[in-house]
Amino acid sequence: MTQSLDLLSLRSVSKSYGPVPVLHDIDLSIRDGEFLTVLGPSGSGKTTVLRLIGGLETVTSGEIHLDGRDISRMPINRRPFNTVFQDYALFPHMTVAANVGYGLSVRRRPRAEIKRRTDEALDLVQLGSFSDRFPAQLSGGQRQRVALARALICQPRLILLDEPLAALDLELRRRMQEFLKSIQREIKTTFLFVTHDQEEAIGMADRICVMQAGRIRQLGTPHELYYKPSCEFVARFFGDNNLVPGTLGAIDGDYRAIDTAFGRLLCAMNGQQNLRSAAAGTQAFAVFRPEALGTVNEKDSGNALCGNVKELVFAGSSTVAHIDAGDQRLRMRLASLAEGSIYSQGERVKLTFSPRDSHLVLS
Ligand SMILES: Nc1ncnc2c1ncn2[C@@H]1O[C@H](COP(=O)(O)OP(=O)(O)OP(=O)(O)O)[C@@H](O)[C@H]1O
Ligand SMILES: [Mg+2]
Image (cartoon, rainbow, N blue to C red):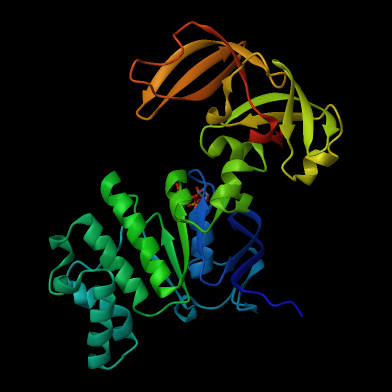
């Protein structure tokens, strides 16, 4: 018998609104205690996934299992989950304490228990002294923490967070990211966190599920998605990869040749079976990060790319050189120097990258 640590799993879940399909055949397992982030552009179906799990919508087909049991038709109030929305949805006429304790009041818990657990939840989000205030008397970050305390108080198995930090300014957002992560570590509850901000996803998640147009494109650790994207969409969506189109050539151990406008390049397959089995001549992309590019020196005999420096963009500790090469534009990250860049605008440069620091995806 296989032992599963999955808390929740979506099995072949599809969802249509009327005739319009918005989720296609979603398979997703959420492990007990993990911080899983759903990342994707607007309209990709992130909120719909959350609403199906939370019970605000029902699946068109497929099943949702909790601890191995189908809960697809379980009513919302019986699901051991709690949702925190982007707009917090606090009751404006209730105090902070009443907002936080609300879930226990409707369950008719004894007053003393409600008071004790409300105090505990408010302490956890560091708002112990704010219990008598009203939402209008709080900052955005404080309101968000009240919403979190209200979600935590019923000790849900899973907390669903739909872009909970979107309304906060950048600085507060960063602090709340750290705060959420530390709370999650402390209480060891499973978090499913939706965002369209890849930096936020990378910083917080144990695993990230990337969605596009109602489909899961890749599920993996931030590190895997960053260095080993499995398709063009993820390679483009994640950070600032260079993608150079070409056709696949011969396999050489863990590497494969790709013929591009720059000539033949050798790139790592990084264990992707679909690249190993693709026929020669298949359309693909050579993928490499701006920091993987370097200047060619005499001894280099490997991947070579020529171009002209179009623009130099200073970004503090690094400077990004935009290099035009035919109809391609490459980005190269250089260390910033006090005296400016090692390159000047318009200069012709010959660049290289190590096959080890590269990747391939199919078109
Ligand atoms: N109640 C509804 N009726 C019809 N279509 C809907 C409904 N809710 C969502 N959709 C459609 O489903 C698709 C997915 O929407 P969803 O809200 O899940 O996207 P999202 O990834 O959360 O986007 P965003 O980042 O903008 O919040 C969209 O095309 C949307 O227009
Ligand atoms: Mg949404």
